[in-house]
Length: 141
Image 1 (cartoon, rainbow, N blue to C red):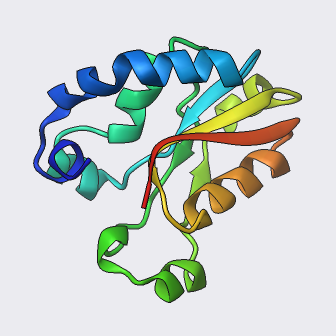
Image 2 (image 1 turned 60 degrees about the vertical axis):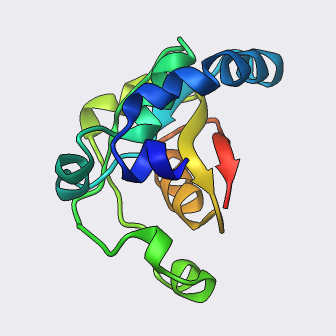
């Protein structure tokens, strides 16, 4: 994961494709995917959004309706307490409101550590009318 995420080797997504797709199809039905966004600065730094690449593998309806307007210190540099104390800040693109209303949403992220990022994103989507929120990650940190 470190080489994929931090060293810009997006091609490594191919190494997890088969297992990720197989597991997703087994566990998730009739869901709409929302990948966890990066700030513009982090996206520029990495050259790609690893959560978006994972989401693309799953070949499900996908909405990139969340935005992360604030550039924060990397999560990997924070301890557990810091991660739980300061939740990720997301905004919602209102043009997707009808698209997610009454839908089962699966948030897609690369690594699950404390769940704070997924919780913050999920709260916004529920507030905007999503029926339910689940998550799919490829690693546990």
